[in-house]
Image: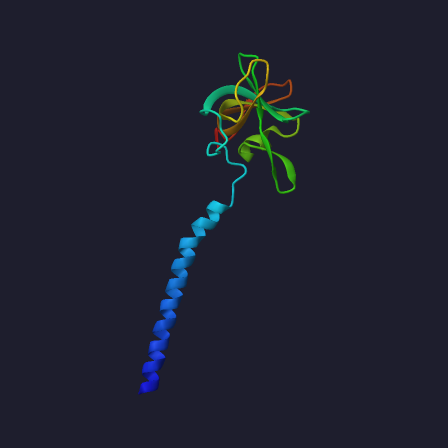
Amino acid sequence: MACSHQLLHGKMFAMKQVRLLAWLLAAIAPLNLCAQKDTTACKSRRDLVGSCRIVHGRLKYYNGTPSFRVWVVGTNRVLGVHEVEVGDNPEYPLMPEKIWSSVGMMDHEIYADFEVCPLSQEKPGAMQVVCIESAKNLVEAPYGGARTKLSNPSQSK
C-alpha cells in the first residue's frame, strides 16, 4: 500500500514540474521574440527623427546608394529608402517586400501613396533618408511605359 502512495505522490510531483516548466516556457518565449531585433521594421524604429507621413510618389530602383528612391510627385524632392543588411543581402530596403518586389531591378516603377518615416532631417538640396511603412493605391508602370493598376495589392504592408 505504501508503494502505491509513493508512486501516486511521485506522479503528482512530476505533473507539477511539467506545469511549472510549461509556465516558464510560456513566460520566456515572448522575451525571446522581443530580443530578436526586426531589422526591417519601419514605424517602430527608435532612430526616427520625426513623424511618419503620407506622400504621393514614384518608387524606382536606381544605380547608386540608396538604390530605392521615392520621387514626391509635384516636387523636386527625392527620398532615399534606407537599406540594412539582412542575411546574405547587404542592401535590403526598409519597406514591405511586396512593394519592392513589384519594382524589380529597373523593370518597373510604382506610383502610390507611401507612408514614409524619416531617418534623417529634411535639408534643402539633399536626399532625405526614410523607410516605407506601407503603400496604398499602387499603380505599376514599366520604365517609360503606360501605367496599370496592380491586381491585388491595393494595400501593401
